[in-house]
Length: 99
Image 1 (cartoon, rainbow, N blue to C red):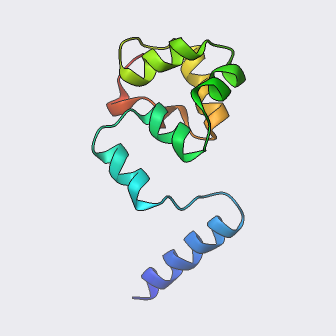
Image 2 (tube, rainbow, N blue to C red; image 1 turned 120 degrees about the vertical axis):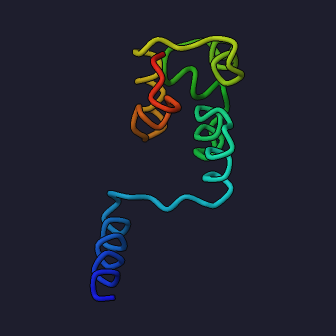
Image 3 (spheres, rainbow, N blue to C red; image 1 turned 90 degrees about the horizontal axis):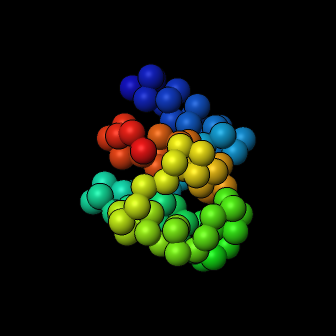
């Protein structure tokens, strides 16, 4: 039980320092249910497709195709998306699949 308390304290401190973030359940469920992570994170960060595309330097239609699975982004595009969405690249690539 002491270990649980220590783990909780460490997690809480990391959140307070901005090193970790608490996600709402609907975001977690969307990701677990297999929804496109780019779209889930974009919506969670309250960005439009146009805003995210401009920040990454791609077109909004290309981003829409990535979100629908019609096209795959290069590693550079995916890295730009991850950086802009403030997440790790691994969070955008389901099951460790190559882009």
